[in-house]
Image (cartoon, rainbow, N blue to C red; front, side, top):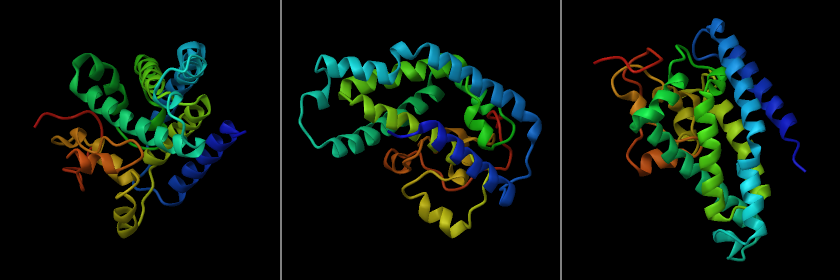
Length: 233
């Protein structure tokens, strides 16, 4: 059994430590109380609503043989890999939708309103968006017939991935450029949080970086240095 809390806490401490050792920008810590409070609130709300969460929905789908992988026999390890790839792609499109639809952007812009960018930015989400995301992931997981264990692993994957991509960490440029061919680096995701031009309409990928290149939303460098909500041109 995977000890998710231990892994999440360990990764958080690792990223936070790297932010101290090799920060990409000077830390602005006055944002932390609000960001952390939102993270705790969302955790509580998601736990309370877990009866309709991805794991619960996957359990029901398995019980009634609903969904693709409840109808097709494949090795469990292969199914888990496919599920994570498909769910990551689903999150990419959810992210794009959050920038395209006004009502969705009204929720998602709280995340982009953070005037700086570090590991706590990954906690800063509107509770309404957190609940909608949970329902969306549950629906996609049910259609895929994702095993409950795979959905639990994906939730851990999301938690770890969010901490990594929002880390205020400076990587050597050549290493960053190589990694972002397959994994979203902090520098790549920082571009998406740029307040200049249309930077926020690029680099939507959550963890697997290929989706931006595949669907034409990749941007290699930021238009400016300001972080936060998009500014008028």
